[in-house]
Structure formats: structure tokens, C-alpha cells
Length: 358
Image 1 (cartoon, rainbow, N blue to C red):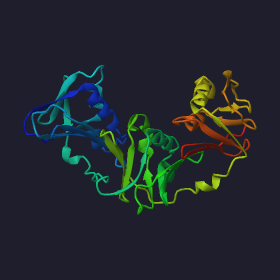
Image 2 (cartoon, rainbow, N blue to C red):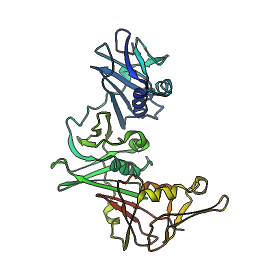
Image 3 (cartoon, helix red, strand yellow):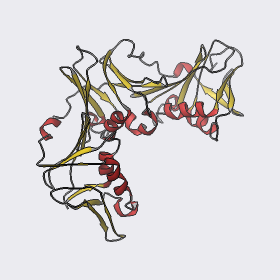
Image 4 (cartoon, one colour):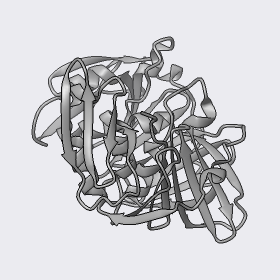
């Protein structure tokens, strides 16, 4: 019997509420283990939880105060099938019925998967581990923007956290970009941890809270990123290794100026994608004039308002957008020349981006 409820019982839940948590928890792209294509769905005491994992990253989401006449139920069902079933508009209430070997949802009958085959995952370490620190949404997004997607270099797919006295600095880099965020330390015994983050990076658009703070915990083996809004948490394994010594790159620039990062992003995004795909760089003149030229397509020019650089520079377009995105206020830009990293600083956070030689 795949579903653990012993009789047919129904939960009443908003369609969009369920679709959102299913979207967030759908993590695995591993087709070698079919059970990882499923989601573990539990109902207990009026709370529905949905959990997905690829064995490196686990996402657990909650919907509280669901209308349910029974105490508990549990089933594992295909993530793709359930997500497809929930497509639609509005948040009208639908029934989620747990039966023997099947789940009925929004008019569809979905076969369940063997619940005993779903991985037995580590306990929520936010209850037992050390509290590392607390991040605002823009800080969480900023860190994920510099995490590498190259799994051949696992150290660069991680976020590093290291305590220095009363503060903790989180850092991520893919060797072309660097993001650091410094926040008050939540524990005076925590030292440092390297947290796998490639799975978080892939789903950052959905996982990062829009307004709630995120608390980070670790027990040395796993780390948890828990939203204070109560919607759930992400749990990742820790990585053994040495994070790159990024501090040797942080040399004071010779020229600085202040600008609105949203204005930079808007100006760069105006460039047609056909001109800058395939890693064609965008040039920024000292006065803020933008230029992209591609022999087989054409040329585009734009302008960044308030740009006051000492020289012309050039950058990968996507990296440049990521570098200026997700800030909460105006930033200070530091440039030495067209060969050294550009610094972007504000509110205890730092971004570095390597220029492109043209």
C-alpha cells in the first residue's frame, strides 16, 4: 500500500496554495532514482507539508490551517504529474483525497509511489544546530547570484559562512563574480561552514522569500535556511574543503562613485538578447555609454545614467545584470582600470565582477 492513510480521506486546500508549495519543493532532476521524481506529502493536525529532495538539497514547504477532518495521512506522488494537475488560475478550494495507492486531486487520479522508498532525510537542524545568522531577502538573492553551476568544481557551488568576532560573513563565487554579505553573528561558538547551494541557485526565483527574513542554521553535516514567514525551509549538506581566498582580490579601487543599481540593470536589459548571447560582452564607456556589436547581427547603443568611471570597461551581460541586481539601496561602484575587478558596495555587502578583455 503506497499511501499510508487507511481510508479515503480528503483535505480542502486552495489550488494556488498547493501549486506554489509543489513548485518550490520540486527539486530533483535525477532520473536514475525514480523515487526522487516524487514529492512526499503529509497532513498532520491541520498542516500540509510537501517535501522534495535530490539528496543534496531538500525543500520542505508548509500550508497551515487546511480544512481536514482527519489526524494524519502520508503519500508520495510524481512531482510533475501533481504540478500539471494544479495548473490553472485563481485560488479556489479543491479537494486532495488520500486513498489506497492513489491521490485524487483537482479531478485527476494520480498513482502513488512506495512511501517507504522515499529517502529518510535528516531532521530539521534548526531545532538542534547552531544559529549562524539572519539574512534579508536581497542578501539571500545576492549570495545565490554568484554561486557556480559547475558541479565539476563543488567548492564553487557552495556558500561559505565564517565568523569573525561579532559578525559572520557569507560568501559565494564562481571565479568570475564574488558576493559577500556581513551580518551580526547569532552564535559566539560557530566558526565556519561550507554549504552546498547549487540546488538553491537553480530555484532562487521561487525559494527566496519576498519579504521575510531567513535564518541560517548548521550542525556541521547539514545546514538549514528557514524563512521566518513559516512557509518552510531548505536543507542542504555541507561540503568538506577550503573555500577560495577571495580576500586577496579585495584591494581598494582608485576611483569610486555612487549610482542607482536598478538604473544600471534597466539600461543593460534594454540590449536585445540576440546581440549579447553566446557571451558577447557589453562595453561601458567612461561616460556611461553602452555598446554591443555583433558582426552577424548588428549593433546596439544605450546609456547608464550617472555613470562616472575613470576608463572604458567591458563585461559579460548576464554577469553585469546579476552584479547590480538585488540591492536594497544605492551602491558605491569602485573601478581601478579595465583589467581589475569592479567593486560594488552597500549595506555591509560587496560584489566583485571580473571585466572582459576586448
